[in-house]
Image (cartoon, rainbow, N blue to C red; front, side):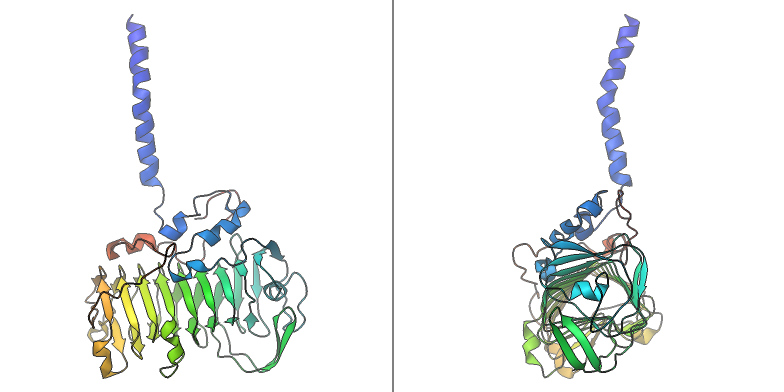
Length: 380
């Protein structure tokens, strides 16, 4: 009788043990932001690469890249600006139609000319350590539906004038010199730039100009650079008033001076980013942009005259609609708001995402930059 009682007592404890185990696993598993939570826990991500296209948030969540197309594998780091060979990155990005581009191995790519990416392409470097550096870098010109994920892009140089293949059947003869941006988005839409490392280039790290719109820049790590991110071509280019950009879950720093971002015209939703000490300012603008800074974490530099997060080029900026909502300010950092209204992003269905309080940012951005991914296990 006593033995049967011990058995039933042990059996009755099983549900409690399972519940306690589930609670332990839940609290010990990593906390991801909404983008990463969509796909990173899947150990079979390498067999389900195109799921990534459904995980974007914000204005650029409309970007589906090469979803629905074939896989194209980059097998060689070699580059020919006019007549690229099959297996090279340039050959893949200039093909017609959707392609999901992956890499067979780690590689370092030095481009001869800027890499023009045709519409409906995903560059997905998960599982490989891929560097594009020491030459011209990536240019998105008059294209749509692009995803760039998992690249190390650094030490980009200005290009010389010359011929370059811009799509499968078009060679741009005597392309003008380019400034040396890491990623330049020009007259393009539906763009998602996610989980890249960007640093130390001749001009900007990410520039979005000339009426580009519906862009999301997320989960990237930016380091050691002067002019980080420009949204808008010039104060006189009013077509940029339609620009809509989401900047979310990025880590800015160390070694950055300014433009995180700098906005001209248009609208920027800057949400849940982690800012280390800046050299001049963090968020700035001219030409009356609308900016909503929401749930960011700002750690000011030690110099007293650099504590202000914001910078406005003109006195008229006192009336521009710039709002700070649930931001966290450390080491004396402060945001100067202006204008009347909430500066809501007015996302369409499918673009919305929940923005956390700035105190959660260290957890949400802890994996910003290139991830360590290997087949048959979740990306860490």
